[in-house]
Length: 87
Image (cartoon, rainbow, N blue to C red; front, side, top):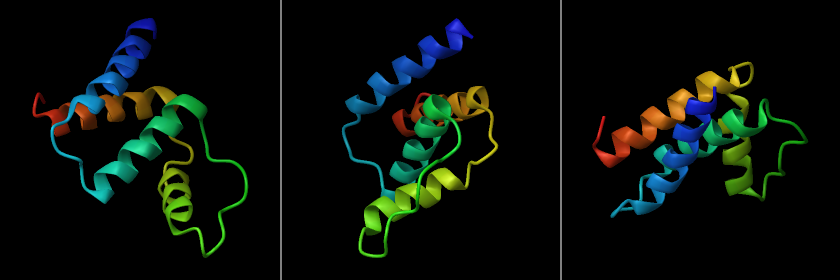
């Protein structure tokens, strides 16, 4: 688990080195996987209709409800590697 956590933290640093900003779908996936891996299932109320960005983030995270934290961390690491072209 400690090794996975170290890889997860390294992936968080590596994603900031991208030369080109990922698309919205990739950004939402990264956000949701990060939140699921670090915080667990989504909590709180869904943002209102006027907060479109917050709502999209909430919905992306909510789709991962029930996913184990370790699984989300592994998926996050894989997604970062794909975006970096090292997978």
